[in-house]
Image 1 (cartoon, rainbow, N blue to C red):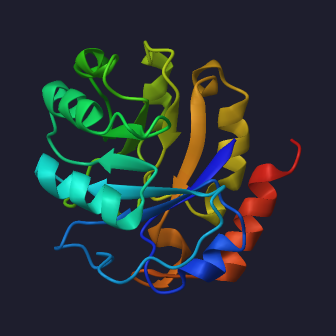
Image 2 (cartoon, helix red, strand yellow):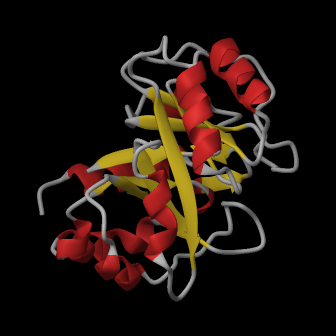
Length: 211
């Protein structure tokens, strides 16, 4: 199972040394983790993900080019038409990935994702809260028993070191079959955008060790 560390800002290169599969950079100004600095040099094997919330296509494409992003994560009310337009406008990047986020609390109507099947590469399921991400608590993963798609997804929402056993148990279930990656953020911070390397190291080692 792959690992994505989101909300990168203050110590990106330190985190990159741990070789996660993805690093997420938030391009939403109200966020305490909003990324506005120069992109540091990162191993090209690590995919750089830009996180956006209802941004214009022009803004997204501008940031993709400026920061040489490998993927975008769409956290707002972006429509399938929007996703398809983004795909069409960025066809020169063969491996460019679009991740569409859906927020879950106690239940979820999976019919909502059907129109996105042909225009996104991944889904990301996180916890429904006051903010579009970074709320710091998990949703009820048993909801994913009803996942109707074969599209790989990211599991997100307040995941911390205390959830390692839960993840191991989840991996034994049928609904984890298409879980592509675990997405972590606020539970591994000493302050917004500053990651705790010791905690991250422990989590990554536990996540990648054989069950």
